[in-house]
Image (cartoon, rainbow, N blue to C red; front, top):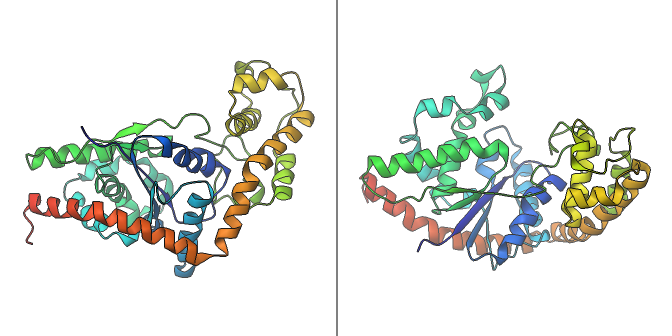
Length: 334
């Protein structure tokens, strides 16, 4: 029976926020009760597909590792490590560059979105990013990958790479990974624009709840969050066409452990003057312990590094035999 292996990573660029917590970190912590092996990495190699200040990149790598720990991801139960510390990621990525087809990459919409009109000035790494992502996943023979909507296309490319490698070399070596449904809270939108995803790159700090925010800052941001003039509906279909209302209700539901229907049963017919203070209380109650733990960890970089070294050793122990096997299958010397 194949061991269930879950793998995911967060890019080492910018501070993490409530969307990252609900869409990824909290789920990673919750999945520690599953009968599976878990690999969670900090994607510092992916980060350098666009320019990064070297000193800032290093601090961001530690900060994201601290976010994993503060959210409850236990380095004894889950493998937490920087991507660049395991050389197999880049070794396998080159081999997969020779397996993947140019037409597959031409179809990747994220490159078009990120490169914009001036794609000739974009790095080659930004273009081949999905191949490195395939290497990230297949290096650990991951069977399940939690992905958001914006990464589904990349997972499909990973599946194509696994199938083509197995076919070309006449082996059944790589499993074809499956999408792991993330459930509610997987897509949190901006507090300033209910049509835009909450983002660490948004120039407005009021658009997001940062994981480092204090209780007072959190409450202030919820108070200022964009809403509308209508009262909350009593049923979910009443949120159609009301993106800001839908987002705020979704945040309340995800953090309180309730369904959207349950939240509307309590607050339907009430205005945001009543709902926002209740939402602020829930966000502060759930996020303050995480923020306090995170701020404490950031003052102890040696503690973060110790956790990462535990993960690096575990990750290398799994990755090195896979690279060795693949080199033998492909016919590389040594």
